[in-house]
Structure formats: C-alpha cells, structure tokens
Image (tube, rainbow, N blue to C red; front, side, top):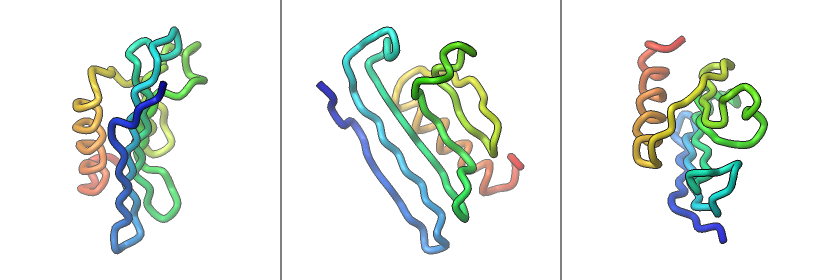
Length: 100
C-alpha cells in the first residue's frame, strides 16, 4: 500500500516551480526505508535542484541522490524531514547564487 505523506506544488509569480512529493511505500530491497520521494526546483523549464530515490542509480551506489544544475550527487538520506530541510537549503543557495 502506498500512502502520500506530503505533497505540495508552488508556482511562484516569476514562473519558478517548487514541488515536493513524499510517499510511504512497502519496504523492499529497492526502498529499504519505505519511502519514495521527489523534490524539484525548476526555473525557466530547467531543473536546477532535484532530490529523488528513483531506480536507476543503484549500480553507482547512488540510490538516494540529488541533481544540482545538471550534476548527480550522492545524497545521505536520514528521514523525510531532513530531506525537506536539505532540499530547501539547496534551493536557497541557488537563489542566492552560492551554487552556480
């Protein structure tokens, strides 16, 4: 059974999009924590920040990972609350020009 824990989409007046989706899913080898998530920040149609644990990166050891301006970086997943905090921190860094 899949339960939606948190879902929110914000479209800002300048067209930027911030979207969160966190699901509780059955524990499995692919999702040992029992969570599936996707957080994304889009500006002018380009994903500047994205966090997810979708399949496809296991062989590289990056089941949990983040996308920062086209780079894929391993992410040390702790829990869904830390995930939201870390994602928001990276969005803020992009907005402030700290990450370019």
